[in-house]
Image (tube, rainbow, N blue to C red; front, side, top):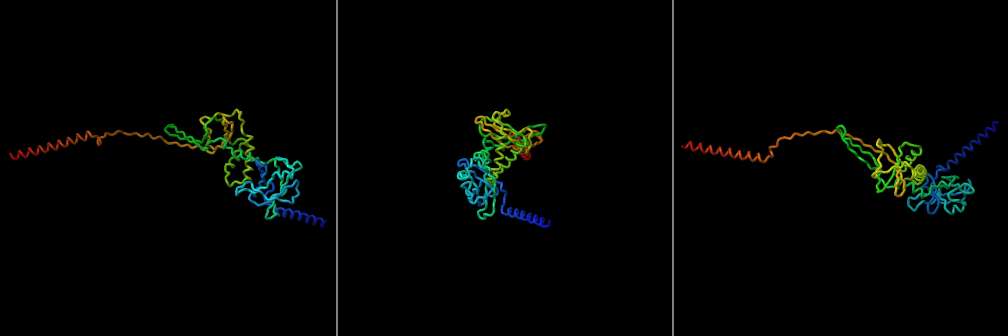
Length: 335
């Protein structure tokens, strides 16, 4: 009995040690990949999370047995900052009799990837590759163009002023201005709404923060989810809820407060194009007491020229009279 327990204990130790050893040879998550299908060549570019700048080599197999031959990672563009990717091209498809856009007819395609500088360190082991879930390059471009299909200014504002009960009230609110002349219709969805609409706004917010440093893995991942939701929620051209846009201006709802969120669908009637804008409302309110200024008209004398002339003549006359009197007094004294 003791010998049996000892053997079981040793067996468990061996299993645990093997697992730990195997884990030290692999870093990253084996299933963390995104796939982009190029529009012209039809090649599939495979991005491995956290390894877009890693020098690695990769191999494919129809089963979970590791292949012998590996291929160095390729680049996804000619740009100096291009990403390192595994890829499925026409040669790979011929080797594995691939049916483009689907998994292998005879089974699943598996991928291995390991560091070129340390072949014993794997970043993917028997990772299942399903080409059917690859994002088409044309869809990638469509997703990145959303909010730019119809030319608008989403940061415009409208200010109104009115006098009420002795106060001057000024209110500034946000609005969307359509920059190109034409006829438009719109629909507005107030958030929070359904789970789908809430998720669409969340994805749009995250996508709006993309910049030159955002990696392709993240872009493909978010654009894939975003486009799926966007296409499922976009109202049809014949939807009865479309309302005309007056004056090429879409105002936020009258009672909207700063921070309220809305998804605004916009349709251009001439082309049938439909786009979406993700509005965060703005409202600024101020009031000022109106002070009545009362002024009293005072008589003006200092700048009246006629009065000055009269005073001058009067002064001269007084002086003349005074001189005449003095002369008469002198004559009387002499007489």
